[in-house]
Length: 61
Image (cartoon, rainbow, N blue to C red; front, side, top):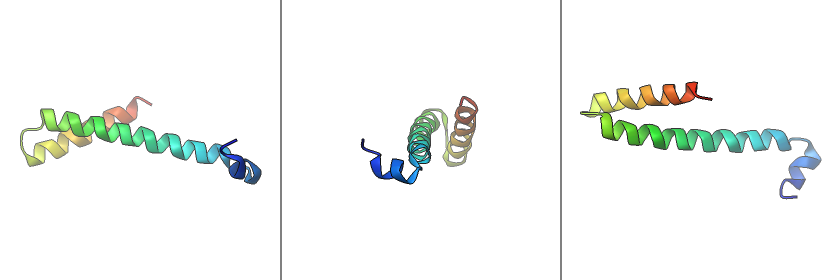
């Protein structure tokens, strides 16, 4: 019953998908950031490791 206004408008599925995608991206970013911090040596390599982990985690879905 928490999505009642969205159910009336018929967009409850889209709202739930947006919430799910936001949470997935949040956790993916946190994991990629932690991995980049641990594995990256300098500034440039940390950014490269972050991007690599972000892409690899995106392939898991």
